Image (cartoon, rainbow, N blue to C red; front, side, top):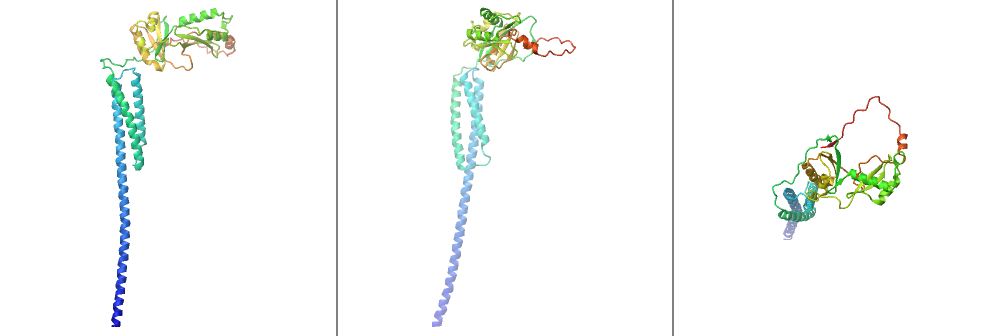
Length: 360
């Protein structure tokens, strides 16, 4: 009996070892399975994030495209219907153009690969703010369009002839007009020269035997008197060649806008009536901010058969033009010219001088 008990005890020990081994294997399997499940869950979460990122990216790109199309449509409608000189509408067009550029830049800066979810949310929020700003502008433009008068059938554009440069009619004299800051100013050179000469005589500023004047005194006198006509003040200066040049400075409120040109009391029309197409041709000096006014003035003079030409002008400083008077010199002019080396003779007669092309 003792021997049988020992054999049974040994069998139970073996069974216990086997069960322990199986339980250990099961625990290891559970750990491996749990790790695999965690990895799968993480992979699924990442895939979902990527899908959400792609969806947000597609939404952002769609909003970019929708905004661009809305801007282009409203801008085209505005450009077709707006009044030609409506400053408020022009300002809105410029603001819409700036927004177009901003949206295009933001679209260009979008990364090719889907960014992190947080960055996309920030971009989406910014995009929504920009979209709100665009919608406000578009509503304002629509309101202006609704209040604008209906087209009368007349085109707002003006026909501009291509220039055909040619010299003026022999014996005719120029009469100039200056266009700046949307206004036109007649430059009556003959009248201004008469005013200048009268001022010199009144001040006793006569020329010496070499036909030279005291430039310093001339400049000081006109600075004090502010002499000129109703459109310009005469401001002399002495250049490097000792010439006394008279610059022209516009007087405030003296010019006329494009709307004033057709009025019965227009100063521009009065200036045209003081001359004739047979004796004078017109020279238009046009700054870049006054081309529309020039076109209106050119149309009026063309209806009166005045030959004319124009040239673009840019001038810095405080003055606007120069008097056509080039024969007044400062003291020392004769000595300056005598000190310069004379050109060597070529032995060939100088070619005849061709008349300048002043008409178009």
